[in-house]
Amino acid sequence: MRASQFFISTQKEAPVDAELISHKLMIRAGLIKKLGNGLYSWMPLGLRVLRKVENIVRDEMNKAGALELLMPAVQPKELWDETGRWAVFGPQMLKIKDRHERDFCFGPTHEEVITDIVRREINSYKQVPLNLYQIQPKFLDEIRPRFGVMRAREFLMKDAYSFHTNYESLQKTYAQMHQTYSQIFTRLGVKADSGAIGGDGSQEFHVLADSGEDALAYCEHSDYAANVELAEALPQANTRAAAGDALKEVETPKQTQCEDVAKLLGISVECTVKAIALIANEKFHLALLRGDHNLNEVKASKVLGDFRFATEEEIRANLNCPPGFIGPVGVGANVTVIADKTVALMSDFVCGANKPKYHLSGVNFGRDLPEPSLVADIRNVVEGDASPDGKGKLSLCRGIEVGHIFQLRTKYAQAMNASYLDENGQSQIMEMGCYGIGVSRIVGAAIEQGCDEKGIIFPISMAPFEVIICPIGMDKSEHVKKITLQFYEDCKKNGIDVLLDDRGERPGVMFAESDLMGIPHRIVVGERGLAEGKVEYKARTAPEAQNLLVNEVISFIQSTIND
Image 1 (cartoon, helix red, strand yellow):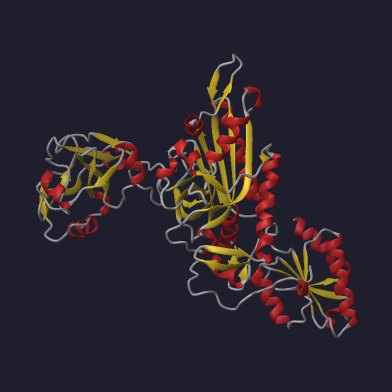
Image 2 (cartoon, helix red, strand yellow; image 1 turned 180 degrees about the vertical axis):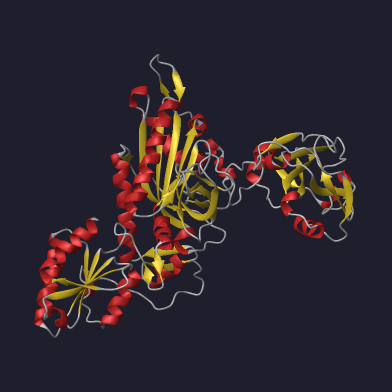
């Protein structure tokens, strides 16, 4: 491609509302243009990147035996009513009416549509397993769309759905899709971890980046990785030490936080226990956590079901004490005490005394208060916790979710009566799996992972062009023109994706724009180098350029790209 025949629309400054580096660089490099809030046009340069991601995703899905189709973006309300999701999906769904006042939505997802297709077309166990996928724009009416393509209202997604006669078959395809996703991210050249992120029957794939919305826990010495919301928090001790201190009241006139209590008493905050008042099933609960730990609401909801934090009035009514001084000692039968696993193994700890301006020290289960009604993992993991796989310690990082696979089981098939006839002619409900990849989000995530002060650093597989040729004085030197055009044609003949910058721009402009756009390899052709039979080559990430012999350039580029 000649730059003079292409559309390059770089700009020096990013818009003031751009927060993430990927958003800033995609605008500056001319990959996208903002149309409206959360709506972006993919410009020719950006579309080349997007299509390369899309093609790798498609290629690997095809290799896995999945079949591509394309479903309507606009979906009728009646399908969503069958699963009950029309009423519960919320305002994120863009709902529209046609001229006959019939209700439709711009599909945020396609479980209902694909299930409808399969229930109409699949009759026998001999027709499954079946894995169908599409690559299609989706729409979610985000409350506050921000971060460019990372959280846009309209986005490009690959969604796949598999159908099975039994759970064993679903598990097999689920494992295959996990492997396929791993291969996709390897080919794209981005670092994406999955591990145990998502829990049973569900796994997330995250591109690791400091700007990520999700907190992740991982072990450097194993393959373990998990969303902090789901990572198992193991206690640091295996047994509870015997009581050593006597129970006593200590005055804490202004200290309502564990950190402040610990400072006043001259002890570590790890020796304190905080009580969090919760209401679940209209009953009052105290959740006990070590002073430096935080409640994991996802884990707590699995133990308690739906819950909320108690009001000050409810706390006073059940404990006869204001917040800041509450604790588990001496509570009535109306209070259910739930202890995190770490707290359950503590001894001689400090907690609230259920008396204004006082705490208790030397508190021990069994002696000073009954054993907890329930012991469970209800906290977030912290840096240095033992890895659940027993292979080291946990570290924390941020990640951007770019893929998610689910075992839907019979949720949609049951609701929509997607059935088949088994070997005995009996009607059975199908098992389902769902496998999504955010194609457009991957572009933004890759930039978050690969950039510097000069601009984007694309992996070779995603770059809009693999090589840029920058001639100096091509309009003035026939020699430069001849060698430049020779390189250009040789690149095309050898399948190298090349951009020839023939716009006549100054070298500084050409170099700055090629770095901004993230083109991995740059060849500079000039009279000075040609006089010695050489041209200048620079890799995007190399600190310095190097000289190559003219007759070695193409073979060098080929070998570099293939590496």
